[in-house]
Length: 222
Ligand code: GRF
Image (cartoon, helix red, strand yellow):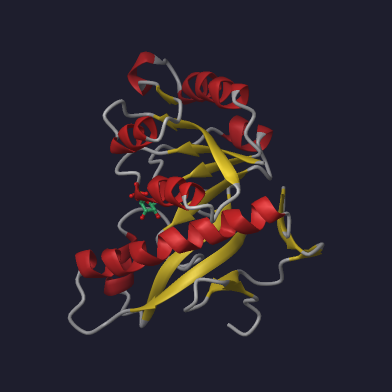
């Protein structure tokens, strides 16, 4: 069974989507630990409610980022995850840990990467006048939000949108996007690697796309 570790700093709605999909028998996996840099993160509460072990470490108690990450990842490694999912984890990861876990870590980011990396992505999309926006699941690499994109969900930007309405529309698609990506990983049809993902043994030529029925389909026509 696919063992998933989740890193989260806040609300944890993506974590909840995974927990719910597992409970509903839609995702054959187990969340083996939830890890945070914020003891007050609501994600930790969600994990505790689901009986998932949690750990929060306070970055202020460590002299350097790499000391913090070394400690954090020693705890993560101890639960033997097959995949480590960053879902609203707001701290930069040290290169050493990214490298040591290459091909094992994914992130969900609220934009159609490579567009709008970093923070305030909905504001960025509106400011750019984008007609389309969305979310991406990508393999984590040393470059922030820069690793190979595995799967995306697209939403329209509608007249009258503000950052809040757009964020809500994107978030509603993030949840099935993350669940479906992990379903494919759990089924073994999708395999993560250091340089991206492979589907059915062939490297992904383009990110998979979440369709209206919440299925991931080949992205080559986009
Ligand atoms: C999501 O928009 C995710 O894409 C981004 O941070 C947000 C986390 O939301 N990385 P939640 O904590 O999962 O509710």
